[in-house]
Length: 200
Ligand SMILES: Cc1cc2nc3c(=O)[nH]c(=O)nc-3n(C[C@H](O)[C@H](O)[C@H](O)COP(=O)(O)OP(=O)(O)OC[C@H]3O[C@@H](n4cnc5c(N)ncnc54)[C@H](O)[C@@H]3O)c2cc1C
Image 1 (spheres, rainbow, N blue to C red):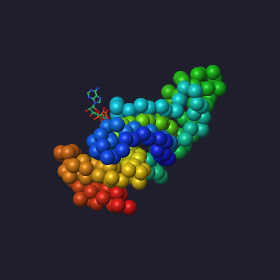
Image 2: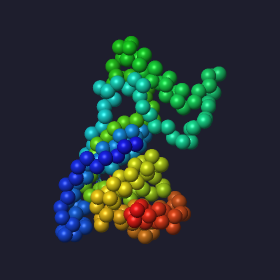
Image 3: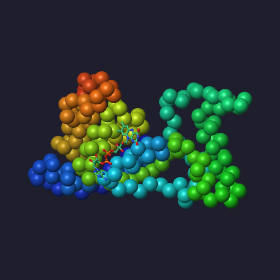
């Protein structure tokens, strides 16, 4: 996963942190995340997105994201044994064969998996970015979008420490967990992690 802060436009911090967040915009490029991850990202509505097309870009030999949990797992179906990488190669070949048969890329892509990696550019204002980071740096968030959110936060802390070193999941940002029964119960550990992030 590659994350880059492509551009930002900010007002001076002298106007206050609330005003800074309200009137500032941040544009990020994220490359090499799965479609499963980008699908979660684009649920955040107060933002603009541009994503690599699967209609026009060929997905022959498509790159993909492999969760650690599938490493070493071999599945047998109807006498055919296959691991995760084998299945990805098989899907890639199936996709390629469809395109060679004259199926348009926009239809052949229907066989592609959530694991397929993608590139996305998005712009959020500071308030939305903080909202996004509070939700997605939380232990309750899915691991890939959490990794992405932490990567984004690291960049922001380096560039704007005064504002973003306070940001993290609610147990760190607000000082208490808002997840109720779904809480991970590891608030001390999580707070220590984000506190280290802002001081390193
Ligand atoms: C741990 C986790 C698990 C999730 N699981 C699921 C799931 O199982 N199924 C599922 O469908 N989704 C799931 N989601 C996605 C979730 O439901 C939200 O769609 C996503 O987090 C976007 O957050 P949001 O709606 O608060 O804010 P954003 O879309 O980022 O908007 C920010 C805030 O702006 C305001 N806002 C935005 N648009 C409007 C509007 N049209 N009208 C009024 N106010 C608006 C709201 O106050 C909102 O909180 C999950 C999210 C998380 C973090």
